[in-house]
Image 1 (cartoon, chains in turn yellow, brown):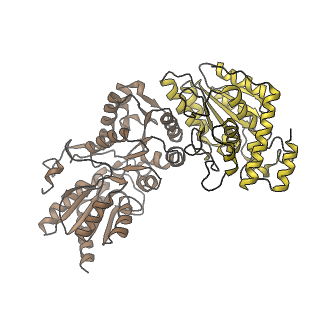
Image 2: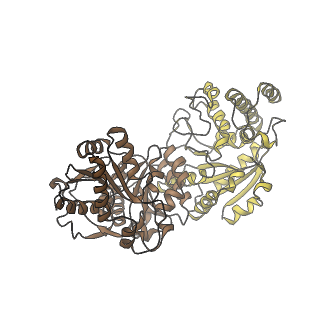
Image 3: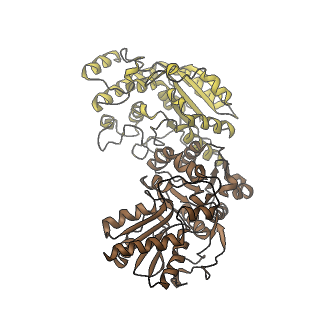
Length: 275
Length: 328
């Protein structure tokens, strides 16, 4: 069943809150991945608020849609979403990466309500998404599966194996998203291991390809709805993003891939992210 | 031949019938497709070799060909299990335990997923295809993973029983089986409980702990050693993880020395697993029979078995060596 999308201004406001939560989680943890977490906020938030069916009180609800975070290192963004939606008490967010926390440094579904798989070793999520999608189709269920990947993650061979599988088995209940920020740990993706033209690659793999602004919640909502309407083939959304979006000194800075703010940087970031 | 009656082994252990263990896997899968609606079978373009082609032909709706992409196959199986299915993935041991190890580690075992792995072509007896296809390393690769069960059955009956058990059990399982026709030594009535080593022959001079075809060779060796006045206990240790500490410690205590035998590297396999138990529970002299620190090579299966020390005579030799150590 289709959800009624939130007005853009309202969802943008939620995204700002999520960014503040991410910065607070990271400063309290003292480590974590700031850049990708900030950059993927709209991609994940739009899915949860405007597209997917789920029940925070019953994370294993039979009729839920599935979200697999293949780029597991940006889990603070998904944790913030789950905490704000009530999958667990929001205060749990401040235990990120601490011993005994339900929020591991990379996603572990056996510990965190609302996660569907354990990820963090890059390249594995799309295969998992395909398997879930196959099981759903075999059971004649309408649930959908979404999978967020990094652009650097596209270097992994398994992604392209999974790309062939989803097209071969016509898994039109699968929608992949590539967080296309052009940065990976060692630098610009085109310098480290050229990916462009990424959309042509996915088209050649027989996927329906949509490109959009990965920070525009309306554009993302449209893209997701197009994916849902597309039959007979899986859809990939190449979402153009700015790594570190929302915090000026983190934006587009490759060194902020796997870094948390210190207190001073945190306060500066929170000032920039104020309503 | 002197064996324990309640083990219900075949009568003629000197001239047993032969069948590949992989046939037991294929038979097991056919039975499961007939009886368990959740079972699905995945293969990576080796359906004929792994015997999953039997499923493809009879229950095509249960068969998913993944093409030559083992890593994707493991992840897809993980997803299918999350969707409530019981996936059996099948390919050669080298290509699954080696190539897809990280997928087995992180997606399957860390995720606690209900994925069953059929690792075909284990051991040197793969034969002429040579070292690239002879898997000698799966046991340590798999048993190091938390939550993984590792079973190396002795013959086709036992492989079928292990396959059926895997579908009933919730959690990741690795089944190791081979290519070549090997002696059928057990029967339908032979006891098989995962996690329990079975004593096929009693004896108190030396314990021989084996898995796979080496169980049969150990029985032959024991029969000849008996004529020399040496009474060996022969234990079929099919489940390498979780290992049967109780039976192994008892054998160490009562026999005072031990030989392990497996068609696998001497590093970290059955021998390593047994050594971990014995050294900590009841240390006794121990010899490990397996492939020494080298890769396999091309040749005829039984020719290679002989060349690499997988023989009755080598077992006899090692038993005598370890008996000398015991007497010191």
